[in-house]
Image 1: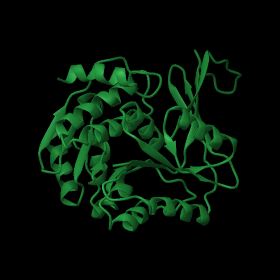
Image 2 (image 1 turned 90 degrees about the vertical axis):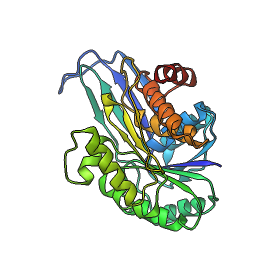
Image 3 (image 1 turned 135 degrees about the vertical axis):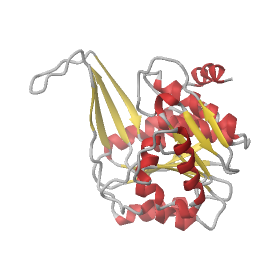
Image 4 (image 1 turned 45 degrees about the horizontal axis):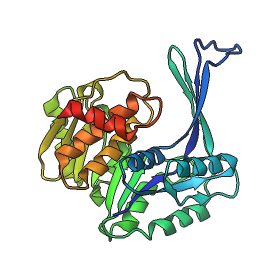
Length: 301
């Protein structure tokens, strides 16, 4: 088994901490940090921490693209990006003050030729490989590219993991994704309703299974998570205790933990490892580290 992650619009996250942010004035930072970002890349980095090999795919451009590629390699992640001939991979500015403010870059234009290059790389995936598609689709790509990728690979026994919202998710259910991970609000949006009880969440997660999803993992912030597995069995897990420092990448980390935990086919363990891995990122300034993950696992035994 090899895990492949796709990040269509990777970024350098420029994290700035300041005591106060005053609009229209020159502000001074207290500290700065540069991290490579993008949902698929985050999944790959955390999988590496958990001892699972993966290959990060996607598009990079310019000197920022080179920095993303080098940064992934430093984290032990194999990469096979498509290199765009013009533009630069985006920089996302994240200002952490009394409140958190983000300014996300748009990213480079992605021509048809580059999309074909990505398809050629995806065509090499084999039976029993895992493919993670995560995040929004940039304006420069067809908005049905998730469907096109899954349709293209649907003849192989590949485990598709799709972490996206509403229509992006609903439109791929016919390809029987191995895992989808909406939160409780996104789950409600898919059915045009607000879900207020655990029973309602389970009922609607079951509906997504009926439409084709193999496993449905619903994250519920402070209320933990619910997994309806491929056998229709419901698993529940509370949250880990800790001080939340960072919301970026926690969901991606949960996906990585679930992938690692489900390798043995034990879905209860997969849910716990996903929960602990998401918590380890939320309680850290960076993505989860192995020691922190397994320390939090003790809370879930």
